Length: 472
Image (tube, rainbow, N blue to C red; front, side, top):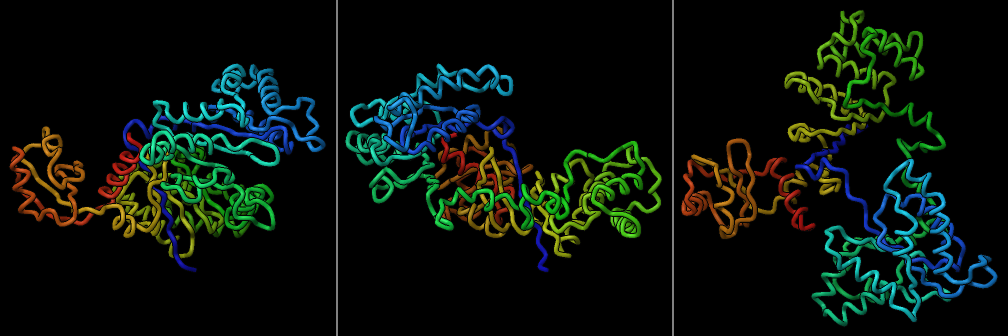
């Protein structure tokens, strides 16, 4: 089996990454009064209303469909408002679980008609998108057919293009994200620019059904086993080691191994065989009778890894396994990981150490809750850093980055230990010319060297580029 180490590099930058992510701003457009599934969906949506900043709910069916829809209320807006009022009756219980649930009055003030003879829905969309809020607006159309009005988003986009021209239209469109069927005409088919993100829940069809009808089958599997239908098989095939030491400190090394072996269904000669292998692998020979709480941090981590692989799982999840471990022990720990990978174990690792990420065959960079890159280390470094990179030694760093602002062909700068890393447009400088340009800015240059990008440089450029896109 081909060896694979899969690394997911989770890195935080400043306070934004440490804070809880902002909820999505969301507008729902529903043809409640048609197929009753929209009313069912609205119930489910309101149960999760705490997870979003709901900018508005637009009802776009003026008259309920005879025969198919038996709701005694016969207009879409009336149906939606009645459901929101019913939600209000449950609000006191909902906020016991999460105080973020909006009140019914708050939702009712943002619930409008989207019929062809009124602009209320169009104005709601324009107001939300034009608001002074950096977060984009997600728009979800739940159905616009057989008696419902033209989508208010299509009408809003028509107006913006007509009144603001191509440039204003492009800016407006860039603030929107779609989770919707295509009901927007040329705005999704021909008018540039395209929406930055569009999740079309109607395509592709699978077995003559919309793909989301098979959502759990597509995503909720581990090692080929369904987590709902086959949880025991999933547990048999994975190992997990948490960042925080989670073994029993008041048990001996041997007792911890025996306990976790029993959890995984090992017994008799098989348990003794695996226990001996784990003790040898972790370098714990002779310490089987020692209390786990008296072990060094490095030995505790090795024991935790050993307990996670007692049952020889083909998939292993390690959450920052070398956190708080000295450099020598960290290197030894990675030797163990690479040995397992060489035996065909798939290892998913989270780490804040960029030097560790170099050992992985695939990396995912995450910044402020956003996946900004996913590929091999070599490809990420090649694609993320499109500039020439120079390492500059200065006699003093005070105000260095500020003094270099506006330098011709300068793209970005970052500190790297006692050096300054300078990213410049391709071919704009060699080391000598860049040194002269920096000296001309009043800085005392000791050396300038052209260097290949390291992973840290790569991550910094990815984060800077993400900030430029979001305006952060």
